[in-house]
Length: 330
Ligand SMILES: Nc1nc2c(ncn2[C@@H]2O[C@H](COP(=O)(O)OP(=O)(O)OP(=O)(O)O)[C@@H](O)[C@H]2O)c(=O)[nH]1
Ligand SMILES: [Mg+2]
Image 1 (cartoon, protein in one colour):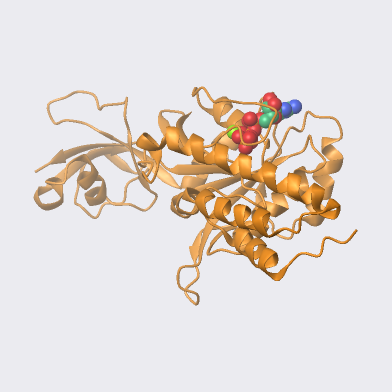
Image 2: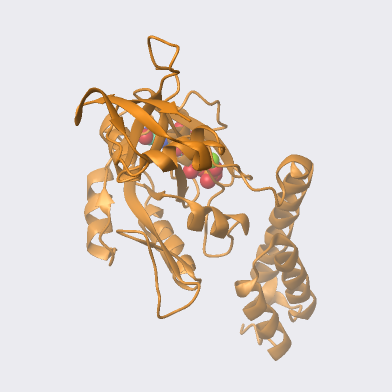
């Protein structure tokens, strides 16, 4: 029996696809349910709509219960850089976050376990990198805060579920979803100057669950179907396979150097908390991070490091090297 969907229904469905918040989605779904012709031929569709409505309501409730702390609130940048972990449902985003940090994350074999983006700190040698675990992106749903998080991130990790036959398609759905927006993934970060607002975030592909049966076949399929070429780390977030390579590559992608500050009166620098600064950054930039007064009052610094003789006196334009020890004078 044909469904004979009305124009009003189709219009609501079109709007549903473009909805950018759960509230909008709910309004569209309710309109669709109201407009759908009620007969045997649409039973299945009606049931599907009702299920979607209850899912969106749950999402909204989850958002509300945590809203006082998180809704509309920017996650403050911390550490040497920010990495956003994205992907379809069940890809293992929370498992990877838990494995690379010591943060407890809720990990479960059903979709939409994670409902709110959550930061956690990943150690690399003596520095920390901020990872952000996120809710899944699907053809029908994307947490509206994700656009900003992806644009602001130094790196995105796009995870693929190799345990499930739908995993490759779900990854494609993430890319399709983003390709309809001005927030996109690429091999390197850049802003498209010809198209204002179009922003590309450097991305690593992380096909996950390589330990699962038939994961290799799905990986081959992924390579055949994925049009974009990202740097790839095939991992098992649960078993730890390739995670140390990924951890190192994440840090390297940030392209920062570490600098230890030393008080003139102290014998040793503060080795506990290095400052990190983009490679090529100068002493003056670093001094400004220590205290903004230094921006105007810095006279000189003494530096101990691989590129200079111990205690060499340098000016604000000195380009810092990894592991430099710096003694600021004003
Ligand atoms: N075999 C195997 N299972 C994994 C691996 N990583 C995660 N899983 C399992 O996959 C399921 C989903 O993991 P999660 O980390 O919750 O996935 P997620 O991407 O955060 O899911 P959502 O929050 O719903 O988007 C869980 O049952 C995990 O135990 C892995 O490396 N190998
Ligand atoms: Mg999760």
